[in-house]
Amino acid sequence: MTQFLVAMVGVWAFAVLFHAPRRFYGACALCGGVAWVVYLIATTEYQAGPAVAALLASTVLALVAAGLSIQLKAPSTMFLLPGIFPLVPGAGIYYAAYYMIQGDLSLAAAKGVETLLVSGGIALGLMIGAACSNIAMRIIGIRRRMRG
Image (tube, rainbow, N blue to C red; front, side, top):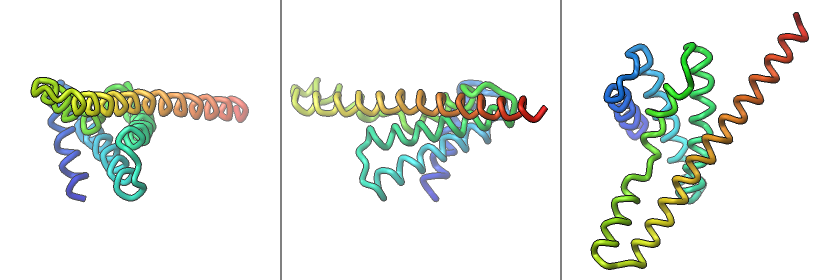
């Protein structure tokens, strides 16, 4: 619960920093908190690696952002960009550069590869989530047309 709240506060601050409209601060924070909780559950409960956990979390994030975009009548990127903040592998980038400067190329390469895998997991998860939400919207649209 603490990490959920801390992730929400961090994303809230990120939304403020990037001048998101005030009425969306809570929704942005919710997206980031949910993404972080999914990441934590995947890594702690299911022992998933960081890349797989990032893929799952970003997929859920994309689905939640799509739902909020419909409900709040805003672009989904309004919720995706701040919401992805807790998943970005900033520490991995830092340590890869640090180890490279220290001359420990094997550790630098290991951290660099892990960071690239996490980044790829985030990108793939966002694509999967966006594709699933598009498919769901088409199905909903077809059903509505069939009724009317």
